[in-house]
Image 1: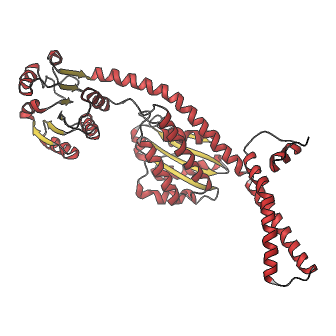
Image 2 (image 1 turned 60 degrees about the vertical axis):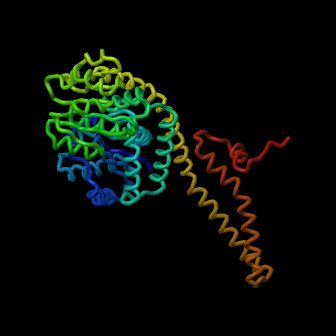
Image 3 (image 1 turned 90 degrees about the vertical axis):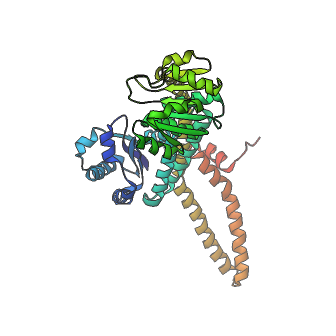
Length: 423
């Protein structure tokens, strides 16, 4: 039995193809049903996010059955199989287990180390239990995926140091001001960058947010989403005096905030520090503001330098993360190897049970024991003795079965019964 995965992600397929293949929650039951209808697929799991769609199957013939999944996906998204194949990758065996450990740990993400994927993978395992016939293999895979991911995130810095401009901006503000709980932010613009920055500010515990935009309705919408207030674009400069942090990202071709504006606001603020983050190109914030006392201006280039340095740091941490992933892979395959001995253990135990029943019948017949209570006591004694005799060798048989080396017969007996050398 082995794990195989058919998938595509942000590296192999453009967003249009990823959108076409994305599996909506309402479609899960039907697609799982089609996959599980194959008698040679025993367990299955689907991971579908904005950056990846992956189909994991537990099978005894991955070559044939991954083609079966490809056929189902092709029909579902109405894309020719040969066309679909251009965007997909296939992993099998250890490579597929290593792959899911990498995915859950964020090493395969568009933004390396991003934590959201871990929750998405856990949700996928939950759906696997609902629809994908989750059995011993998938349950153990989930256990080892969670263990490995937690080690990666605990013992490496893969999730530290922001690698998005908007997040880096908020991190920078946090370092300058310390706590943001008593600070107020003015957001100029309501596009994606401003939206992300606003949400990061809320997560960082900002005291208050005011949003302004040329289209007032968009400012109102963003303000509503982050629990702030909106101000008309024509009068936002009146808010400067109350703003500790100003983040701007608009399509304006001229400066929106000048040094003269800030000089005037500083008088009202009594020179309390102001932090400006200009994510716009061309710039919205006058760079001369940085020359004013207690005013600090960071452009998108300053933030990109921070992001690039942080990305390199995460790449270094990814090397450490792979060591934990390889350890997890070894542990998982040790468990899988140990499972091969289970039928042997069951057979051995059944043989002992059968012999016990035979001897009990022979014994009761020979000594003409008909009293049921007396027979039950004898059976209890024999069963207890048999279980004690079998406990050590069966335990050691299971543990030693994961070791791929071979033992001689005398070594095997010493391991099974924990025998010591006789002097």
